[in-house]
Image 1 (cartoon, rainbow, N blue to C red):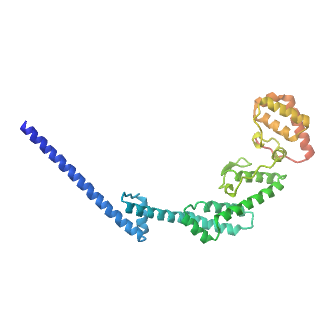
Image 2 (cartoon, rainbow, N blue to C red):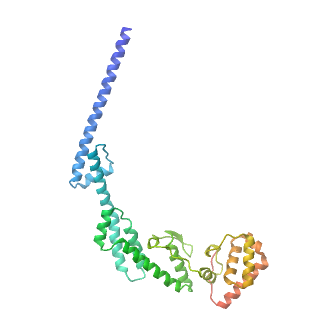
Image 3 (tube, rainbow, N blue to C red):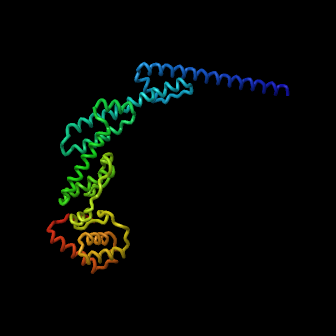
Amino acid sequence: MFFKKKHEAKKLRLAEAAEAKRKADEEKKQTEMVRELEVLLDRAEEGDVEAQEELVRCEWRSSHPIRKRRIAANAHMVAVRREYGYAGNLCIRAHARWLKFQGTTQEIDTLADFLNCYRRINIPENLSRMTRELGIKRKYVVRRLSLLVRTRYEELLSQSDDIRKFEELWDFIRRTRSNSFHDSRGKYRYSLALMHAGKPMPYPDSWNDLVARHYDTPSITMFIRQPERGPGDARLLAAEAIRTNSFTQAQIALAYCNNDAKFRAAAGDVLTAELAKLVMRHRAEMEVPAEKVAE
């Protein structure tokens, strides 16, 4: 019994010694880390870029209020430099390209690119610095692009009787609404859009008439402002188109029939044939060749 107690006491002393050593090593390590952190902070504050980057890259932390503030100040300084070094250079190059193409047909694209680069700058210090360096405020770029977009939209709209101008108008409208889309030829396009230029450009009231005229077999998705319709509704639409001799309504009704066999069955072969004759008759009267669109 005596030896057992003696052994347990020795075991306890060894455990206490090990714990004391562990704490001492941990304190020593913490002291060394604090010393290393202080050295890095001193170097960073003296302008040593390598030390500044290391503090951010290695994610140094401290619970000490003063060191915590110094770390935060360094992180902000590095973020400012990184943003200006990347986004700032992009912005300066984009600005130069815009100046080169001012007054040309490429001005909209180069100005949109410039604005997108300008919008990458978010830190207030960098934004003020960039404004001073370029001599132009970001809000002016937005207003200028908005004016150019509106002018180009109206120009294309006035020429939309031409199929090429119509398709250019179509793509242009979609560029003001989305960063990515399938263009009028079905090709996927990514554009750092004209979305930042203000309100999206509207589809004109004559859009469905233009689609009906320019395309021989347009898809139903090409027409705008179409309500949800069932097969019976499509049959009524077809009958109404024939009764009113409406070319556009006939094209829409045919688009429904071509899109879904249920709609075609509801319209029936006779009504569908009448729609086709109506379209052909109007097409002959217009004497304008239509582009064929694959189903």
